[in-house]
Amino acid sequence: MDEKVKKYEEKMQKSLENLAEEFTSIRAGRANPHILDKIKVDYYGAPSPIQAVGNISVPEARVILIKPYDKTMIKNVEKAIMASDIGINPSNDGNEIRLVFPELTEERRKQLTKEVKKKAEECKVAVRNIRRDGNDSFKKLSKEDVSEDVIKELQDDLQKLTDQYIKKVDKAAADKEKEIMTV
Image 1 (cartoon, rainbow, N blue to C red):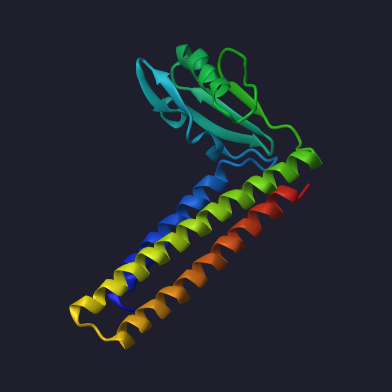
Image 2 (cartoon, rainbow, N blue to C red):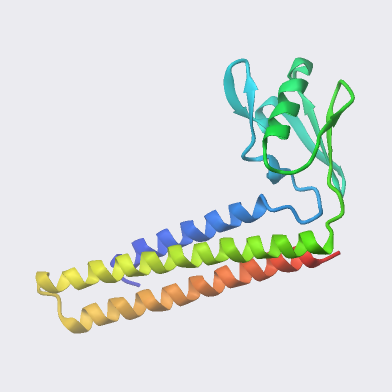
């Protein structure tokens, strides 16, 4: 594959990785510690990720246990979880914080699948924008005495790449929807 097309493939790959990261924050009825990845805790004046202030474990399928290294941090961790949009109320026993994930209702599952489809569509738009940028840069090559055939070939390669990444996005979305809809 041409180097000119390679750089657009890297951008498409980053879009796909970003989508995978977005999907980890959508909870599917099971406890997933990645749901806490974006939450920051006030740790002596500095915003820090929860993973930096405590040990996170999943003792049961629908429970996340957070054990702060410093017991004085329990209130701060609890406050950060309450302020986030994960929709789970933490409970603490003075030593650790429990996050119990309720069973998802059918309505909530459908809501989450809509969210998955929306994020997948946003990723497809990003991939198509990358294709457009690539095609624009290839068209400018005609001013540099590059033949029409070479430009057409580059555009065809980029289109094939775009199709591959759109399929990967669709598969990732279908897998996540299946995970959400599994009771």
